[in-house]
Image (cartoon, rainbow, N blue to C red; front, side, top):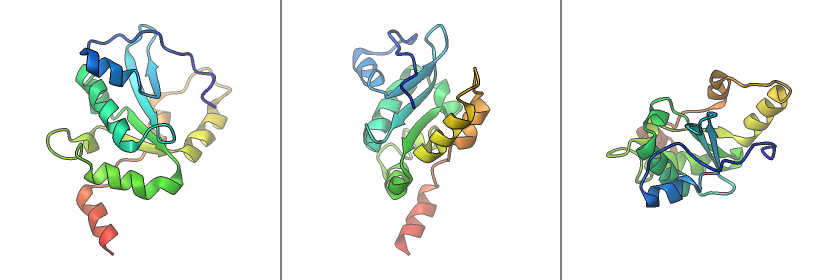
Length: 149
């Protein structure tokens, strides 16, 4: 499904060498024609959720606006919903000082595939359409309470 995407050879951002290395490991970076990142996606099948968060932190250091618009997305299978919730509510990147729970979102493979099939014949897809596929991480306290029962 994602094979039709054009590979990037350059990104228009400034980052330290270690951060650049992590950023280049991100599965998919949607960029403008001048190579400015617009949205980043980590596919959980290829990357652990914790590794995805590490890569997003590196990208945020160079392009903090992606966090303001929640355009950092983890794509995971619905069967891994519990693991996604766990990492997005209790990893070291949640809460102070990173507050990634306020900067990222997630979506499920099935939802992405359905949208792809719906929009594949169009020349463009609007950011709002992608945002509708995304889910916000559950509040950490709410998830902890549910998992206790």
